[in-house]
Image (cartoon, rainbow, N blue to C red; front, top):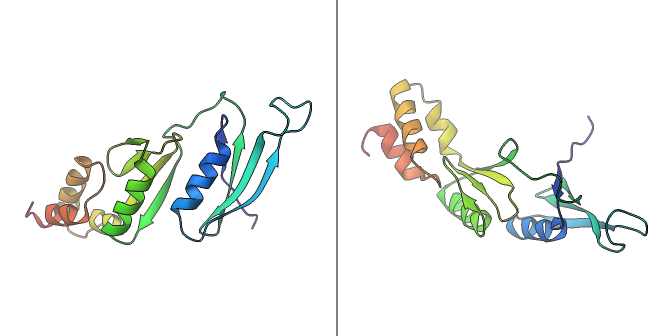
Amino acid sequence: MPRITPNLWFDTQAEDAAKFYVSVFPNSEIKNTSYYGEGSPRPAGSVLTVEFELDGNPYLALNGGPEFTFDEAVSFSIACADQDEVDYYWGKLSEGGEEGPCGWLKDQFGLSWQVVPAALPELLSDPDPQRAQRAMQAMFGMKKLDVAALRAAADGTA
């Protein structure tokens, strides 16, 4: 199967974004940087692309210009083991960005992320539909997801 690489279009922030993402996620690194040459639509020597990996997954950041921007139609979901991971990724990625509802946020570059604790899919697919519904209703009232509050809501003790 071919390797699929998300390509992230930036105006001029590709290198800054790649460095930021690599600093947030473990086992991550910048692999390669290419530059615009003479006669290209951007100044010669400015960054064209940055190839990087986040925990072994490839990404490409492109300085393509202001024509396109990110929106919520595409987001990256982070499966977090516990509340500590939720708190870490939420704190790092929302800094300078914008918190959204239900565990969604936009980082400082406008890219959307979902910070999801492992407990959420478990609670939302509970065999007891009333427990699942209570957890879902609690989630709708949150920005950063709170595992203890989701469990309390599911249990009907919130």
